[in-house]
Length: 398
Ligand code: UD1
Image 1: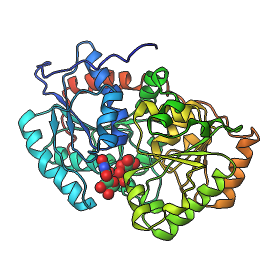
Image 2: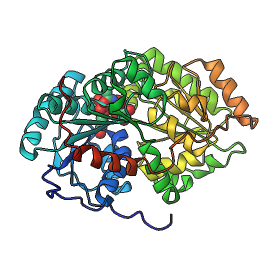
Image 3: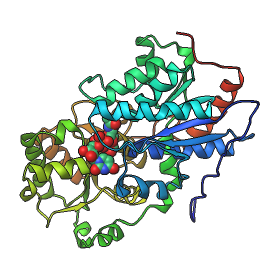
């Protein structure tokens, strides 16, 4: 694809065989790239499937929010709940309180939620108790680590969802083990990869990204190239000693390979709070604010290796064929390990340095692109949803 990505047509509110609009919910950064192709597919379905976009406002910074909306050509939200930050309880409760009147007002045919953030679960709970069918995109992923808030959000959302779309076949096994009937589950592929393939050719050059932040792009010209880092999981960044250890490991990696660190606000705030700024060597590590979608895509596509604790980056690097070292003990996306370029390294400094050394020797994981990560997952969702809604479906009796 060349030129600017087409704007997503406004699906608008219409009456389609008497059905209310599909309420599509986003809340936080990783939701935006999943919902963009779904909105596009609903609008271009024949006949179009009316949709409304609800933003809970969980992420609100220009860098975490506005830039991504622009890059992904997401339409302005029809409704913004503006919940902002808070503890998990406060954030979840605020979304629920503010989402309930939206459901009452629009009488949707279903509520579509994506991923595993607090907004996903909060809107699911509101809809399901009003007997509005819930559709979960990216269902069935499991890290089996119940200390992760995202795992709780996934398990509970899937338990009450009426239609579940999965990105990889292992998801069905988890869902069936948890008692979800197989007939509710449809393997459609990965909408996040729809976004990646759609925008790939528009990715910004890494040098331009560094220059835009007043940094010298010569850092990228190292003979081994450069690595990209993102970290924001509470387990890596919320404890002072752990974060210091992680930054020490990054410094050791940076002595072999310069790094570009796109820093999440949670991580930045904690580095300041714990007084750890001195652990970041500005000569070897370029620290950037959270990046737009096209900047991040360009940085990742050009990288020698990506070090991350993100869920999405594990999948995007697999689709791009770039080795990924995941700084977690587990992953809910095992296909990126079995078939893709991902390796779990936790916070084990020796394992990380060893893996980086292998990659610099050209022995990084190559991997292959998993089944149905082909850029058409959202179209499969729109086609299935149309049939399912018109089969006179109502929320599953429980
Ligand atoms: C959330 C999601 C996580 C996702 C991540 C991507 C949950 C439980 N977690 O985690 O799954 O991978 O988003 O970014 O939903 N903040 C800002 N500006 C913003 C948003 C947040 O400064 O626009 C600050 C908040 O004040 C807070 C911290 O960042 O202190 C964390 O934000 P929060 O939305 O609670 O969770 P994330 O860690 O971003």
